Image (cartoon, rainbow, N blue to C red; front, side, top):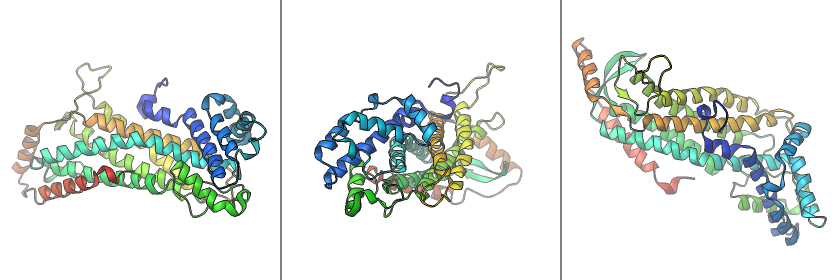
Length: 388
């Protein structure tokens, strides 16, 4: 994390798990799995699978050379396959990249990178969810002024506000978990999506590669059918939006005029020494604010041409990498903003009393019931066996 803004827009772990070395490891894992699967279904000798497996070591590949190849060929896979063939020797070389095309390797590698990088992000999201659940339970009956259009409205409870945010985060989290579990699929179709190089063993080969990589087996190759990628991008965007809503509430409620909450680890000010800025919450909002445009880029790239896109597919690589990184930043900053959050119950009560004094009537209604419903749903979703 050497860049000036790396810690603003991402996390060290997300940078590592989506960086060039991570993509290289994933591409090599796909090439290894392809040859191993080919040997399993009788398309390659076992000796070739062993040779390729031994050669698929990231330290044997020059990232600068792969990057130069990507700029020359519009894909890094050509340079990677050339280097891999030189490493395995003459006998095994024909079985490297068997029946595949460059997009098969990159799309499958992208699924592996997303799964690996989003694992820690989901942990941060679950921590946010659990903190919201604890706040909802603790403040189930704590009266608070409900505000609509940033104006005082009726009385609610702080627990109800936390319960609403809890449900939003949990729903979005479940959506991304479902995509990771069901929609990350192996890509294997060969040059035009017919897997001609595998002849009558095409179905067996796809199934074997999917099993080797622990990815879903698609009904058909999806070279220019990009719904899976769009679902991943959209699920990340929705989750970032729900997390940012939590962070934005912290920013608003910690404002001097309200002071109903206070962050445990505030940021400072270059001009006002005693100022306590909700810096982590501010950064969560900043990360999430950048995401919708990137999600739109993926969605706009869905109408891809015939059997291989000329530009729109290539635009996905960096865009998806940035989406994952920004979600990681949003999640970690939101988690930090909630950690040790101090809730000023007396301040909330004073604002409620002031509202009632104006003649506003009405109790909290079903607020406590909604807290209970949110907590019950959260408990049901929190079972580890339901997670990808």
